[in-house]
Image (tube, rainbow, N blue to C red; front, side, top):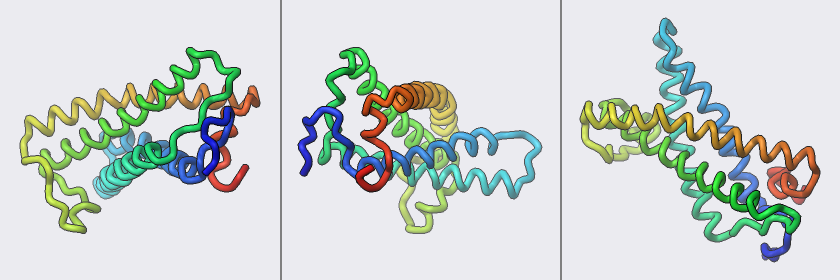
Length: 185
């Protein structure tokens, strides 16, 4: 195993792959979540978007859980010594904030759907039991959380992407830790 204490070392290939697969899914889920709620849409199109969003949420939940397990087994390499302490703390805060908000979005989405009496096709296909009771009040509360948490998630994503672009253009070695997704880079 590589020495993760080495300043500027790359993330493990598994970490990089999970990061970029998650990022692509999130970039797809956000517009689907917005578009599927538009008025006047053809019902078959809207149903397809809801199915994609719900099942994408299940996959993202699994990816985030896997990423957290992977991170425990394969800690992040130390950031380069040239980074100011406030940037190191901010980077860690944003990363953990993203994990938390992705879990909040997945759980609140699941609770909203199941409490609302709707199917989660991917889970229903394997006869997974509903983990929450049917409840309009619970569904409404989960919908409120899901709807409001998206703004926090998007803000964190924008900060994360902005910092990543800054490091990519500065060529200071930080962006190269997570890119490319596969191989040695």
